[in-house]
Amino acid sequence: AYVYLPDTYAGGYTNFNRYYFAQVGKEAAIIDERYNGGGDIADYIIDYLRRPLLSYWTMREGKDITTPIEAIFGPKVMITNEMAGSGGDALPWMFRKTGIGPLIGKRTWGGLVGHYTNPADLLDGGFTGTPNLAFYNTNGAWDVENHGVPPDIEVEYDPKAVRMGHDPQLEKAVEVVMELLKKNPPPAAPLHPPYPNYQKSGAH
Image (cartoon, rainbow, N blue to C red):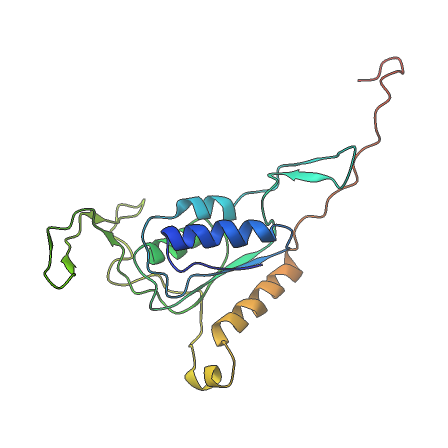
């Protein structure tokens, strides 16, 4: 599966819901958050990406289903670059923090601050903003702002390769996720147990 997230606001929310859940039968996923403009702290995306397989259900008709029913249980990677920031910094930070998978690409730009008031609108249509929120981690240290989130595997977006029709970062992500899929494939569904015969004495 491949899902592009342009931001962590309306566009990213729409893309994730439209494209992730349409591909829940896939074995693995690449989440591309390059150029992510931020917006909110999209922990709901992290919650869905890390959902573990809990159980199976057999049905009278059709194939067996899983709990949770809407998930991809195989490996996942995320592509980042230096133009992703704010919520686009937070998303890969949480992706790594929760151990979902490796980050591939370039360090994010390090603008993880938030503001919810705009002191003044300007005559030219712009506005000024002052940060109201600052991020710190569970160790009690300021984090991400001014230094970004570094990738686990650094890959340049080489202009020459791009002009020749390649995307080096995406190609590396495909290579890595396929290797992870070989090493850690999603769990195969076991055969369901024999159907019980409740007419027999002592059957439970």
